Amino acid sequence: MIQSVIHRLLLRRHFWRYATFSEVAELYAARLLRMTANSLVSVFVAVFLFKSGYSLVYIATFYSLYFAFKLFVSTPAALLTARIGPKHGMLVANLLAIPSLVALPLLPHIGEWALVIFTICQGTSISLYGICHLVDFSKVKHIDHAGKEISFMNIMDKIAAGVSPLIGGVIAWLASPELTMWLAAGLFLVAALPLLRTAEPVRVGQKLSFRGFPWRETWRSLVANVGVGLDNTTSIVLWPLFLTVVVFASSGSSVYAQIGGLATVTLFVGFIASQMYGVLIDRRRGGELLRYATIANSFTHAIRPFIYTPVSAALANVINETATTGYTMAFIRGMFDLADRSGHRIAYLLLIEMTLNLGSMFISLILLGFLLVLQAQAALSAAFFAAAALTLFISFANFPLYRRSK
Image 1 (cartoon, helix red, strand yellow):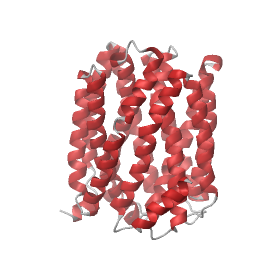
Image 2: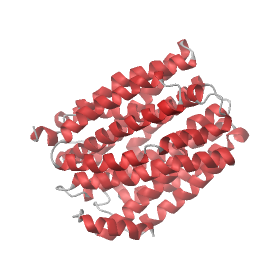
Image 3: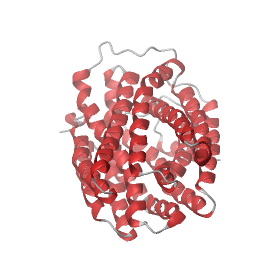
Image 4: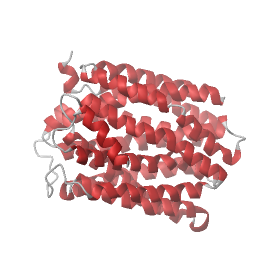
């Protein structure tokens, strides 16, 4: 059903040149289901650890190690992608996510072994899926309508990221966070099914090679992508912790529903912004969009320490969603163009995944450092100020695609 609806939407837009409409619909269906499963729990993991009695220092240490593991496992994930292809890699990634979400709810019973299983399985799953999805999508996108295609992909992500946290939060509040995680595990299994039917868009059995890699052309985008990883973790880990510790400090278990509700507020903003930004990118205005959206995103992080009410938190989420959608779409378009021209698609996208995790690990270590010398609220506020400064590196990318448009 989901697949047929997506098929009709794509048919009207005549995007794809390397794949049939059915294949692309299946790709989108699998993406939507996975993002729904991931969004059910992603913003709640740090909150779940905090509510389970773990200190902020412990949580920051855990995330530092978690992203370090993801950085380490990125290379084996890229090697597997080159060998079996991105579609089969995404299938493996979805299956790997299931034990992580079965184990984490058992944290009160098996202790840190649950975190070990979560780190290995979820970390491998996300790194593998990230590389596979980028390889797959960068290969089948249409050169003249890439902005529209990225817009549609972003809308699919917004549906999942907008609705799922509220659903997951309400379930966690009325039943238990453990039930939310088990539901997400089931969705990961369902998300694997569409991937069984389509052919690989790239040649399988490839080898990962950096011989002749265009470092001079790509290094700026890799440095900028550290800022992307830093920004993602600030919004997905630090922000929910700040809401839990400061804004909803007295909320008890209802904090899951409240944080999920704040995430859902941005749903329609994401829809409208995705459409508008897609048009700008196809009109060769992506460079300007990347620069100004990055500045707006930095401003959002800078004002977060001054937020104390649910209304101001919702407003901050709206501003952040508008800015993040803008720089993300422009960055992805430039990144896909660079992957095409580099002649080393998988190698380049491996480095993208590695620098993403490097940025995430970096902000986790920054938070840990502040927590060791400051009180919780002050440490989180200081980390937001650091993120506001460091995410400006995103505008440093200077993609060749946008240099031509000047």
